[in-house]
Image (tube, rainbow, N blue to C red):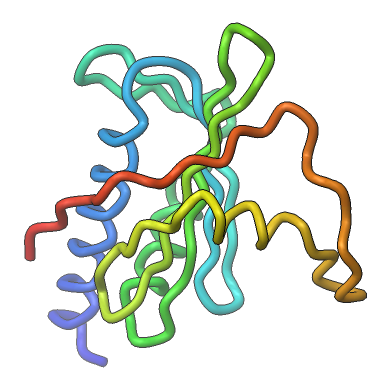
Length: 140
C-alpha cells in the first residue's frame, strides 16, 4: 500500500468516525470498536455540532482502528449512550466492504448473550436497551 492509498483509507475512517459521532446526538457516549487486531474505547460528549473528547481519550487509537476496519478486514463499532433513567441505549454497526451496516436490536442482544471465551449463554446486561442502529451515510 502506498501513501496515497493509506491517506484515502484514513479519510474514509475519518468519515466513518464523524458519522458515528453525528449519529450519537447530544449527550455523553462511549464508542467502542474493533478492526482486526486493533480495538479502542472512546468517551465523548456531543453538544450541538461540537464533539468533546474525554481527558486522556486517544482519538489516534480510534482513527487507526477505523482505518483498519474500512479495509477488506472489516470491523465492528458499538455506541453506548447512558440515559437519565439509568438505562443505556446500545447501537451497533458491522463494517464490511467500507460500509457501515446497522445491526438490529436482536442481533446485538444475541451477541451480548454469549460468553465469547466459553460459548456459554449469559444473562442479559441489566438496564441495557438494545435498539436497531440507524443507517450511517458515508460519502466516498
